[in-house]
Amino acid sequence: MRVLNIKTGLVEGVRNPLTCKYAILSHTWGDEEEEVSFSDMKSPDFKAKKGYEKIEMASKLAEQDGLSYVWIDTCCIDRSSSAELTEAINSMYRWYERSVVCYAYLSDIPPHQPLDLSLQHSRWVTRGWTLQELIAPKKVYFFDMNWNRRGSKEDLIEELSQITKISRQVLKHEQPLSDVTVAQKMSWAAGRQTTRVEDQAYCLLGIFDVNMPLLYGEEEKAFRRLQYEIIGRTADLSIFAWSLPLDIRKDEEGRLYCGVLAASPNAFAECTTLSRLPHRIHRDFSVSNNGIRTQIHVLSYPIPGKRGAYAYVLPLDCVEDAEADTSLGILLRKCGPDIFVREDPYTLFRHKQSLEPNTPRARYLLTELPGPDLQKDLYGIYSSRMFATMRQHVLQIRLPPEVELWSVWPWSRYDEEDNLFLVSGEPRYDGGTIRLRVTLPIPNPGSIIDCMFYAVGWSSLEFNSLQYSFVNYREHNAAVGEIDAQLSAGDYTRHHLLYVLDAERVPRFQNAAIKVPGTNLFIYLSVEPTLRRDASICCNEFWRFTFSYKIYYKYEDVPAILPLEWAVQYAKE
Image (cartoon, rainbow, N blue to C red; front, side):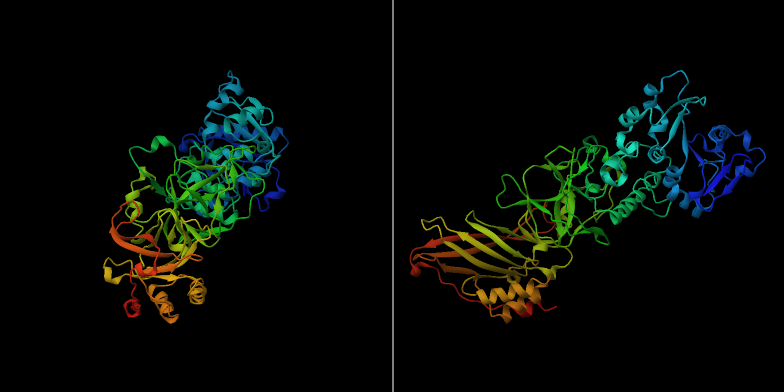
């Protein structure tokens, strides 16, 4: 850290800032050529620059307050040294926090204007860097364009809170920043401006208590890196609570998708009142090369008017105000094996009822969507057709009302919303099992039938490549249990599934006839494979399996069912 010695007028190095008592200046830069830089201080005519007035007046104020040093960002940082600039920006919040007093110079406030009325129009409250300069120091005095003292942070606490949307408790240091949600802190920076795009992120390092190297030239990527650093430090899910303004939606129609991270602090503009749930669960998530890796319980929300279909909701563990009983989340859509993207970046999902949680396991939230380059004015948003390009092959399941999907393997590749198995770039993983439970509409209420269904080879559009089978769950309970035990350990290829089915001597029947317990009735299960095309769920043609059943009162009337052999050789890799 360097400080300006008031008596000598020289910039001196300070090895331990904790031992130095200094004042600090908060201001907005004018013409950069007119500001006095660190190198300018070695020039004999630096006092001729317009920016010298700020150095002179800040020094006089510090001297009046009994201090020997003052820190001013223009002249106390050697900006020609990237290492020093990085250290200064990463330390700046603490430097303001440790100052004895901060002088906030409002260069656009005339002396005759009441500050409580004109402060909201000052450039000082619109700049990104002055956000931390307001929050960090305990003592802040405001000065107008003629350097008249107009009040303190304590005097103007109500006006400052109303203008900046920062609570009085935070401004008065009665509430630590660590108790404020990430989204709410981001909202303080919404609408603030910086000269460099990267500074939208760099000016927030201290507020989020993170450190990162400066890479001027990375532009918007800086804000993404900031979010990665925040995620690495805190498990605050409100970092996903952003939304885009509807007025930028333009002419896009239908469902829209994007990554889970925001493009800038402006996306958090509506998060000013977000607070944490009082009894939130500890969440674990981190950054990986596949996106955000998390063990969060993704919730299932029944889609109105779409039987057996559930939307995915990521709970954000926050509410819009402390008294609200409505929880917040974001809608997700599955695009790969436990890989999700965000749906509808314009709204947050609000719900009062308790939603059913999915089994906790590793899931990935994409931070950006793959595929063709997108125009910047689309904010990286995909249409339904572009989303479908992430699904290369699917097998869609259609069930009658009496048939329930009881369990599925692998869950990671099954989408509860579109009721389908999916694979992206690995067609050899086109295998799956489902357990069906049939509740028959007959007088005997205990007439429930369990049946397993196995299917492989559905990434191919050739009918002969499809292999599937109905298996009576009760008759083959031991084999089914052994298969489940082997498959539950992971995600396997079609070859492995076929090998296990063959090894356990599971028969291959394209239909099933099962006696209804306690009756003389038989239920005949069948499936009709058809090729379909739906550009909203898959980029290629895909198989749809439509299940049906029929009740027979005599066994003699049940159609004959011939066993087939599993073609294990087909799937060798």
